[in-house]
Image 1 (cartoon, rainbow, N blue to C red):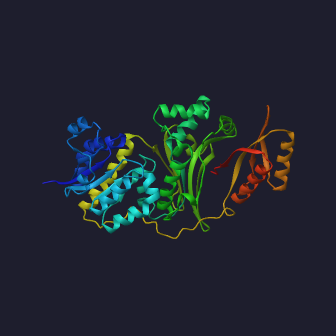
Image 2 (image 1 turned 90 degrees about the vertical axis):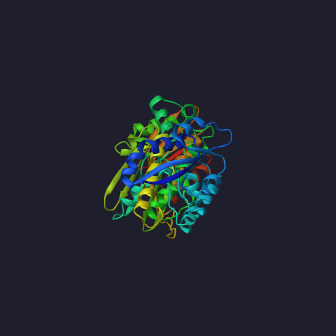
Image 3 (image 1 turned 60 degrees about the horizontal axis):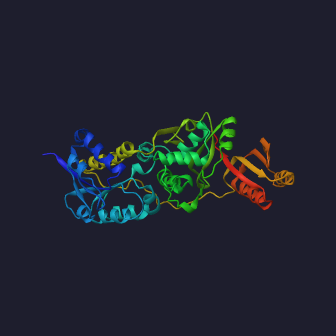
Length: 425
């Protein structure tokens, strides 16, 4: 008789429904690969949600109480696709304490409370996988765990937020304002009614936290790195960047050196020849630099029902395979090394600097500040309407010097409308 692993699913929204379908579609293949049949037995939904039709079609039981899943001795694995912090966190801890393995797609939760969840999973000898928490359908986390075992990753960066990439693409290709592109993204379901996490870079930062754990075994917190989104970005800057040979992308970046780890999220100028520059709309791409392989990129859908659900089901299949092989339970990755952060005077880059001057006196102040701070620049645009717009490309400077220059402009009441790093190579 075939062995079965019964699944308790928390949430039956877009991704949850996708999980149901992917398990059903791939059940035979998973059985032939692992010798184990995956079966969604129970699904937790809110009281009042009408999910009877899909429950009848796929043969699972709807429940409203988490204990109907976590206290059921027949349930082996809990899949959490509810999102947000609570009650997802409490439900997952409940599952671990009842000796259930867990698969999650919840990047907010994992980025902020990963230590507690991983520790509880280990205490209860449970698997905890979350491949779908970063870049949706791109298998980036397991790739870093398995495919770079004999290599040393030095840098990971990429486009990991589909909403902002869609907005930037539409702004440039259709000459839309920031506000119009955001409204369009919301109408298409790419952006929430409250888009804060996406447009302010918070969503990408959660993913950068997780990527840093897998790449460098270090558990950075959100406060350990700079986070800047695309809120209010000007179409004029996107168009000028393109004329200069760049595409503007919201980049999550984490890199390691002898001086420590540096991570940030910010809109950056990506050279048109770079593979990331060609990634359009809601798609994601992650670029890895390592000592052995050199450069590699992983590209695909960063969200969506079936791509994300496929990553979830792949985690389920790995658990099934490890159980079939009676392997010892080990964590997805270890990230307990002491945190060592690079200082602002040890990180450098070239920058795109856009300034707004109210009058000729402020234009003179700009020249004075550039001279006093010893900042070599190339003037690439100067326009005058009611005010002056000046755009420069800077020499390579440290972040410490960048911040000093910005402070000087602000003290002189010169508005810095945009400052973006130029991504090298």
